[in-house]
Amino acid sequence: MVASCPFDGAIARSNHPPIFWCPMTQPSSSNSTVVDLSPTDLSQTANAPLLIDVRSGLEYFTGHAPGARNLSLPRLLLGLGIWRGFLPQWFRALPHDQPVAVVCLTAHRSPIAAKQLVKSGFTAVYNITGGMVEWRRLGLRTETKAQAS
Image (cartoon, rainbow, N blue to C red; front, side, top):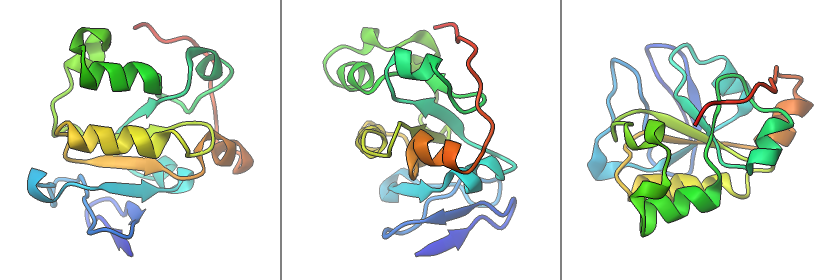
């Protein structure tokens, strides 16, 4: 299924009903699902969601998408599961209607993280297909600066 947001032209591909975040179409928690989004589509989206890189800190520091926040998959799973205090403050402060996208190296870990985010109540969740391998293959910009937790 291919669908787009009429406000900013964002394109999403999914086998599930689409969930979009834009001023004209707000997702509802009753039908939240993960939407696959290519690195190119994300980089061209005017109202891009918060990008969470679920790779390890070492992987993140070797190069990440501009503006991405690092929250490793194990830390995310522990924080959403048994100990919310394990999550960084910036993540704990996110409202559940905040659109988020997740990326990893090869799109193996990011779908796991995306499903857990939906399960924990996030209503607009995107999975970046192909991960950072695809991001780099497409020649999209990366950065190596550190982020403050």
